[in-house]
Image (tube, rainbow, N blue to C red; front, side, top):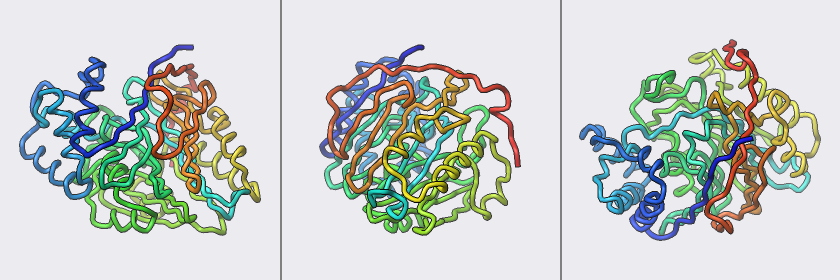
Amino acid sequence: MNSIQASFSYLEGNSYEIGRRQGEEIKKNPNAMNVILSSESIDETKFKDTKRLIDQYCPGLNEELQGFADSLNVKPSYLNFFDETLLQPGGCSLGAVLPSKTSDGKTYVLRNYDLSPAISDMRLCTTKVKGKYSHTGFSVSYFGRSEGLNEEGFCVAFASCGIPVGKHPGMKKPIIKGLQFMVIVRALLENCKDVEEGITYLENMPIGTNMNLLLADAGGNVALVETYDGEKVVERGNPKSGFLIATNHAVMPEIIKLENRKLEQSEIRYNFLKNNLESNNFLTKKKLQQLMFNEYPNGITVHNFEENFGTVHSILFNLNDKQLDISFGSPINNKIYKLKVGETLSFNELEVFIENSNYGPNFWTLIK
């Protein structure tokens, strides 16, 4: 079994101050600096367009990026964040379970994020920007977020829908000019208090990524927002069924018409969640945690790290108590930490254990 390093950052202050602090942090990690900084400036038109969209939908983030750049004594246009705004997203498993389905009458969201540790930040952040809702979640490309829970009990979690959009080999070229997932997730967490506000915030937002975006709040409301090449469909959860789930393929008819292919392993993970959430009248927190302690194909935790598809973090969100049960890396091989939204962990760095499993060539089989 191998190991890698993960980290926790507590970020508080105004946007510029938070940027400066992260700049000082990253100076201690030359490898991360090489990933974040480009050897040449981004195209000026693209740079201005990206800044404009960020200002409109995630206000304050440009000031944070400026503070970061000032700390490193570089121009913001040399930050890769403005050029890519997207790491290679791998697989994700998402599920929201409503009070009508839980034994304690609370709302839970479970999420596994599957990627390669080599291209994941492996960094959890508590972020308290002055004038914004504070939140706790994992960072993407250092400044974005892949999911999180904010102080109002509003939870947002992302999964790619179909072939990921981006500029890397094997990814789908973007059709729509718009924001990528990690800016969208952060914008929602910092500016919205519940599902309805989140849906409204997304209405006119230009979205450049194909995604399954799960929104849930402490009031027991949940929605799945599915986007594909500029199309956007919203499905609200039904208290009668008691849950809403997504993995990495389209589930809404309007989007299936646009992308009817899916990885078989995405359907296997989806069916695992569906079968387990349907088969019980009431679900305990312990039962929900156990779903994440099963390895694929008998569960949703994946150990295919050598093919860039292993669980790099796992979270069970309790929206009413505003608590996160977190594992850095696979929850099967690593400790679970408990953290309230806005709080800090007792450490800044930790060792994460990685054990690879090979599931054979069928792991990448596409089906309809």
